[in-house]
Length: 173
Image 1 (cartoon, rainbow, N blue to C red):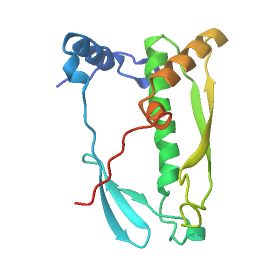
Image 2 (tube, rainbow, N blue to C red):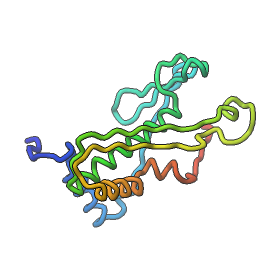
Image 3 (spheres, one colour):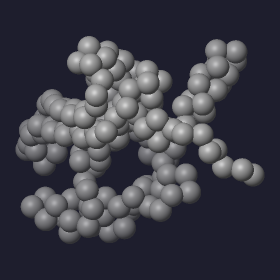
């Protein structure tokens, strides 16, 4: 099978994305997808997440929280998931708009109070807030970059997941 030899803006195969969007317009039920991960505990605070056929993603806590610091902890992975989702959104939407991205960096920071996690109080064990700073190096106009930013932030699956209450069911099997 011949590889796609057409030039790709931002190294994105936008034809695949456009094709999927067209298919979903014709067959809306195709949009309903399910994603999975399997986690195996490895002792202490270490675990590994297996997603599709990829190598396991290691998770651990830093030494200050009793871990062995063999990988990012789950709350760091939440930040990484949001940043990675936004990067996909910027790449796809910039490409669709004909905007070349020379460089993109996304810095994320979250404030988390450990009182509830450590069982010292009841309340919110999660992030109190998350801030994101996006830096885009592009020759596009400020107006085009703002429109791109608005589109990405309004369509980010992980951003939407974190930004609203999501029904969560955790059951013991």
